Length: 212
Image 1 (cartoon, rainbow, N blue to C red):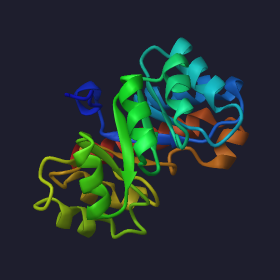
Image 2 (image 1 turned 60 degrees about the horizontal axis):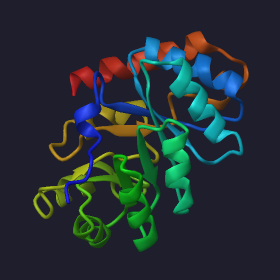
Image 3 (image 1 turned 180 degrees about the horizontal axis):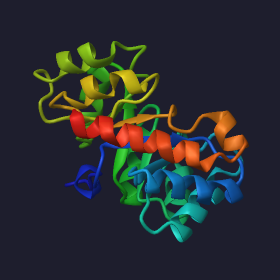
Image 4 (image 1 turned 135 degrees about the horizontal axis):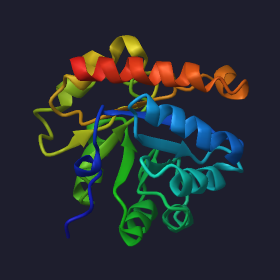
């Protein structure tokens, strides 16, 4: 069984803003600012009660955004994500039930792994794109470099603790197809609706990605 993959759908810079959103009214202008800055693949995390509504609003009103849902920890959330318009899904870890739900949903899925053993378990389930999480706590670029010859068929999207100053190092790795981060949407900027500041951060990140 060939599972859908996210990488072929990516366009532009290989950076995925990871969003924690509380209000659909904020979600759309925030997404528009990120897209204007060149970042079109967005992960809305299911960490707030409004997350599904926020993802649905972005999917409906920001056509240039490729919207995914992250922090999926229960099987029923995969169908909810698909129905909200998500184009991919992400979880912090992997279980048998999550693997089954992901396959049933039919969306590109990035299960989270932190070790080679966990990566092999995901590989045995057929997943070839994995989230390395939390990336910096688990060794960052050196750890990913060490995994490359062990599981060459697997591609990674590391997230967790990544900042602008290590973007180029991580994206230069041959087994990394993208990376995710929260530094692009500072909580105070979102709260104060400083969309121009977020667009500037997105443009700076886009420039870093092109140098990797």
